[in-house]
Image (cartoon, rainbow, N blue to C red; front, side, top):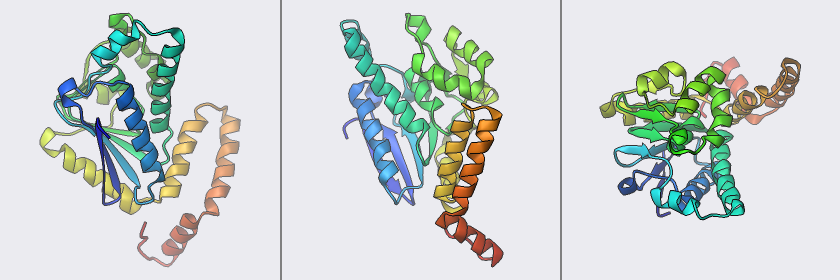
Length: 257
C-alpha cells in the first residue's frame, strides 16, 4: 500500500491515511487502497475494532486537485465508474461488521468529511474543523447526503450541505456528527482505551448483528423493523457467543471475548 498504512495490535486494526504532503486528499488509488484495507480487516479474525486516522495536520482535504482537473475531461461513463468506487468505499465502511472509529486530528473537508460521516464513532481534537464544501465549487455532496440525512436528520443536513459551512468540533459534537472531543495530547490514548474496552467487553457477533439492526430498521416501517428484530433475536440466541455469554453470566464467571 502506497498511500495508507495498515497495522494490527491487540485486536485493533489501525488504517492510516498517509499522504500528508497532499493533505491526505482523495484520489482513485487512495480510495482503492482504503477499500482493500477495510476488506482485509473484515476477513482478519484477529481484528475486532478498526481505527481510521491520518498522518499530518489535516485528516483529509477532500478530492485531490489534480484529480479534480482530470474530472473535467472525463466522459459520463468514466465519472459514473469513479463515483461508484467512492460509493463502494463509503458503503463498505458504513456496513462493516466490525466497529469503525474515526480519529480526527485535523480538518475533514468535503470527501474527507464524508469518510468521517460513515464511521460508527468519531473522536476529534478541539481544533478539528468539518465541512461539506462541495456546493462552493459548483459540485454536490451527493453520496454523503444519503448517509448524513439518516445520521443527523433533514434539518441539520440541509444546514450543512446547502451552505458548505465550516463548523467547529464543538458544533459537530452538538449536531451529532461526532461523538467525543478530546485534547490532542490525549486523543490517541483515549481512542485506544475505548477500542480495547470494545475488544474486551463485547461479543463480535453481537456487535455485528446490532450494527445490522441499527442500519436496517431505519429503512423499515415499525412493524417491519419489529419483525426483523424478532428474527435476529432468535438467531442471536443460537450463536456460540450468546451461549457462552449466558453460561458465564449464570455461573458468575468473567467472560473472555
